[in-house]
Image (cartoon, rainbow, N blue to C red; front, side):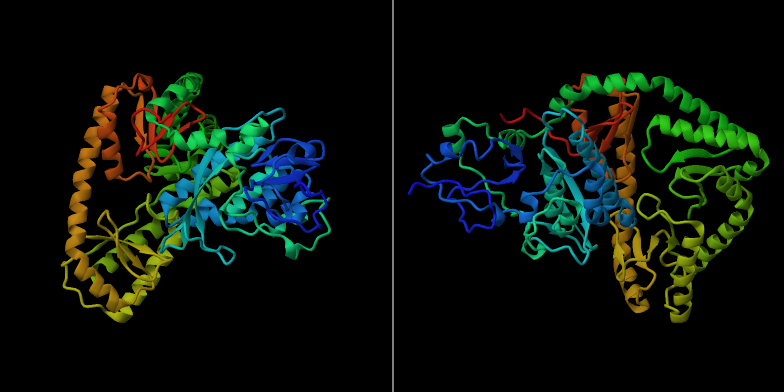
Length: 541
């Protein structure tokens, strides 16, 4: 009997092939490695000539309900990805700003990928490589190839090259070792097979041997992806491909940029503000809209807004006063909430004075070490939250009375954390001190690490000077209109990046806005983002 493919009924016992491929059935067609290729019923005779093939059972590769499921809608895809969003949402990475920023940027790129999948008439998408830091939850399982940290999360990298929402959702969940059982409930035409028989997609995708594509003449769907793997993106090639697009976006954004500067200057002068900032990287149009809202409020209730004299106003996710005394305006709040906040500012200033006194008292008990709050490295806390944190730590110190020599630790810095149990020394020279740290361990740790902390702080100051000099030199050489970095890029990384940039000839950068980040991207207003560790040289063909 000659070998042939198994019938469509998944209940029939069947075997795997010797040279398998990742494929499944959707609506009667075959999806091979994510690509809809042929109707197996029509072309079954052709496959019978492949003698190495015995029988293939899709049920061993995919859940039976998946083989007969309909396509997901956009809303269903979002719902199906809820466990993923819960595991990677930036708001859960408040104590880890670098990881938070990586997840934030990767979510933007994922959102664009999913949006393009839903556009009518799309042909194909370029393979998109994403990286996420996934929180360790009860349903997460460890993988020997993934990197775990002591902070309760792990780094996961995967490349999307799918062509429909359902396979994309499944691939993301499996890449992050998250359950896919809940997806069955999203399909109205699922198979009656019990859910307990549903299996995950294999972590090792099954592929046809290259000879299969040579024999049949079909296009290898992995060919483009393999080319991406072989061909690493270089700075020059990326600028060649994206430079013109960035120039066009930047040119279109210039009128709005001028309007933004005008609104910012007018409001800063009218309310006598120290500065106006944004916590997130909102577009220029979004920022202008927020300033217009603040301007209208100033016309309606100028006296209340004058309470912010000398303050920095930050547009962010919630309203209040930040731990460092900045006025936070929640972008989702209405004018009524903003007005109440400005009216309460005098009471906030009183709390701020009490907070500074509390910091001084903690410093006195710990030998003169300075208590600081570093915005780039700590979660966004309100003044009330930070005061409560300090108060708990201060009361614990009073009970223990750790014996430190007065002023023996002057010049050193520490920050307080609520999600750690052991103290640590940051590479920038400050101590990370948990509020629930054992006093005896705290004393021993600070005293043994004090000298190293001073050396780290000295190195930090030296690097900052070098970084500023190299940034000025880079901006001058390439005639950049704006040159900046994301907060998650360290001074050491920025120094390395600038040194290598200065060795290049990059005419595309003239007059551009350049941001040093962890990924390549052209922002909606024309800013160019490049990773600090960009690659140089010709791509490997």
